[in-house]
Image 1 (cartoon, rainbow, N blue to C red):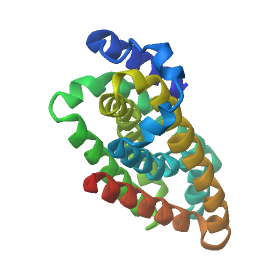
Image 2 (cartoon, one colour):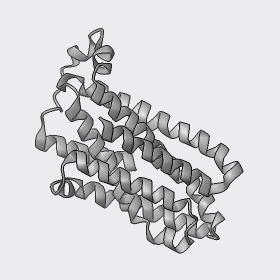
Image 3 (cartoon, rainbow, N blue to C red):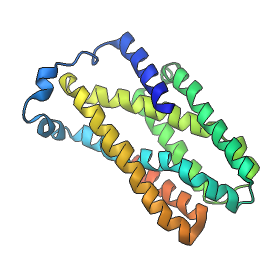
Image 4 (spheres, rainbow, N blue to C red):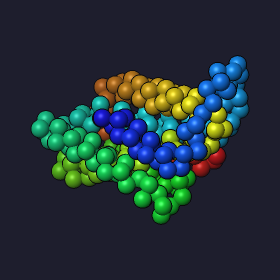
Length: 216
């Protein structure tokens, strides 16, 4: 569902700006495209940033239930909180363009990452389950804006003819590999340190993402 909404809003945005939508398929098929893409240090930095940001953000849905139960929450409460979190992503995706008019694209991404890191570190302090539920909108803010704006930023960073190659690579490495890595590491951590330990780990990974982003 989330992916579908991302595609809808990215398509809407690309119809307005329209510059990176038109990709020369012949250029993409030429030998050395990946090599040329990997020469773009800014793009590589964004890949690393997204890996440490998206991995914890997407793996969070797997481990939220462990944290919620650890702090005394119910199974019904877990379902309600996760439902509200997912639903909250849609309006922020819809409002992303309006929100980003008040900030630059780069600054908006930084703000979102800082909020995400603070959120996960706060989760590691084992807050009351009621507070966990009431702050559901933070996920909408983080996911709804980061997923949309990072795609725009990557498309802006690479050569126009490389966009259709850069975005799938970003999805494969940053989103998919990042999530799998965090789920694997989270499974080990939760066994010994519980849900709070997992979220402290996620918060530290988000902090690494912020450092990489600021240095590039």
